[in-house]
Length: 393
Image (cartoon, rainbow, N blue to C red; front, side, top):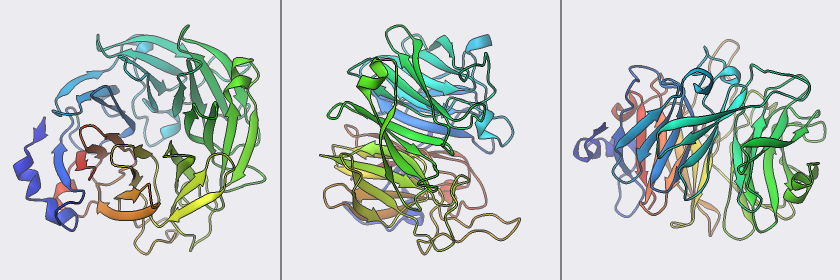
């Protein structure tokens, strides 16, 4: 169900500075089964579908990315059922990461203790792949974010909260739908988003913190080491007080990294700039520090040549102001839009509370940003939970 464009258009000027030729809100969708707060994780777009990890409904929500029609909420049953939101503990909640196999109906979805394989053509969860840590038979923690290596038919999935033995990475064959390799990271404070790059035949992932780089680093694993059954981090690049979260490949050698210095894994001090980084993937050099951040997921759209930043913890003033003891972080949830050519901020648009997920349909010129309700929702458009749709240009 959606609220018709005419009614939403009337609210646009409450959301952002209205001017012709710039990104605007084009629609606001309600989510069936959500009557109050909405809990969700990562979103993705492929093959005319928008996918959202919907914890409130214990489902992978599937929308037509052009008509906005809800095609289904895929839930599974028994061993294939998603965990849902467990209290306020994301570490034991699911679904989480959403990894599409481009041009197909198959989607891999992280969940508690496993990855679910979803067939969108039948709207069913067709397989549950248990992924306990090495030496264990089960786990109560989630498989979180992941990425797809189309050259070697591999999915990489992160297990950020494991403590026995440590955070680890799994590699799953999309041919056999079975785990083929694991890499334990004993010096890691947690794991975030990843991408696979065909040009360098490598996986890149954000590491929350190590002894050398306590507030985050970019790590690299060659696909060749995974195929050989012995994955290893070949390169690491420190990211300063970033608190890295989302990432995506941009044009050329550019790699965009979302930063959230206020995140629980970050020890960044008060006054730390809240930014998004653009780095050279071949050497880790910082090419730009863009003044918008506090994000989780970020996405690159090659059609508009823009980055979209789901900056749920953006703070007015652009620097980290930690809350007082027992207080909450004062935020201005936003969607940041960055020109990938000039590596500069184009605009910041208001968004709904906890807008940490963003997915782009470049062909349809649409950006999907779900949100919940809450005290930081400052406009009528965001008073109730939903999915805001922005234009890309």
